Length: 210
Image (cartoon, rainbow, N blue to C red; front, side, top):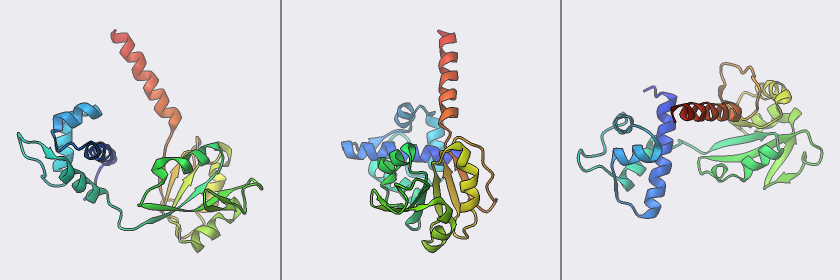
């Protein structure tokens, strides 16, 4: 079953909201309430959730614990993914320290940089190698996911070196540069500039209405 990327993004939002509701002791929630809290149409919420099998009851809503477990099962990883981070500057360090980086679904197994004060040292409990060794280390440690947080001018070079690895399967890039990636590697880009521009555009449109 092929699932569209926006659907998965919404499922992750539902899961995060339901986890919060569980912690607050909430028992039942409706699609309308979920939609209002996340800014999504109730009909879209129902469509997304029914896509993976009916779990709610019309007129009753969804049992929070049951729905949370249901979505967790959909999103569940079949294994713990081994992840590497390239670029241990301000952004890389912030990502390492972020709560989202502490997940049971993946394990940060290697760091890469060019700074001699970082290469060869342990940073937050993870060893840092020189970027020139990235393909060799990725293969040796069977790493499948690379998070890219290097400066824009180093993005393509880093990807080219990492792509020489046979075990690398996916790259999540925070680098503000367009890079070319082999087709065999799944590539996702988090572009903060684009998201900010989108926000400013919609704020401008909102002010026109007022």
